[in-house]
Length: 137
Image (tube, rainbow, N blue to C red):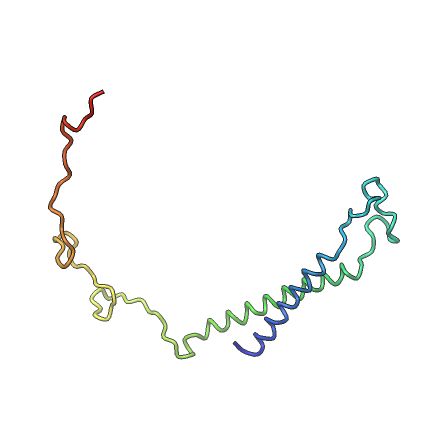
């Protein structure tokens, strides 16, 4: 992990914690006792909507910063994933040749032939129901 990623991740965590605390500290619009009786706008200077307080503005800016950092980390991760082949890591390649001897999965040549190997084959057939198997009512 590069230094830029570490710094961005630390800022993202700090921003998330601050944003959570700030949202929990804010008072809801209808939280006043007078709001239940129709006088919810009595505390505001700027009318019923009220002015945006410092906490509301700070919440908006922290949310913007949170998304910018998250998208930046996603972009960095995408760029890192694109350079995996250049880092000396082998890439998985599909083989179109069915007779490829390097294939880890064996290819069955004839699916209709009886199985051979260590797996036992059952020669039993399904038992047919007889009249003795039916219970009397």
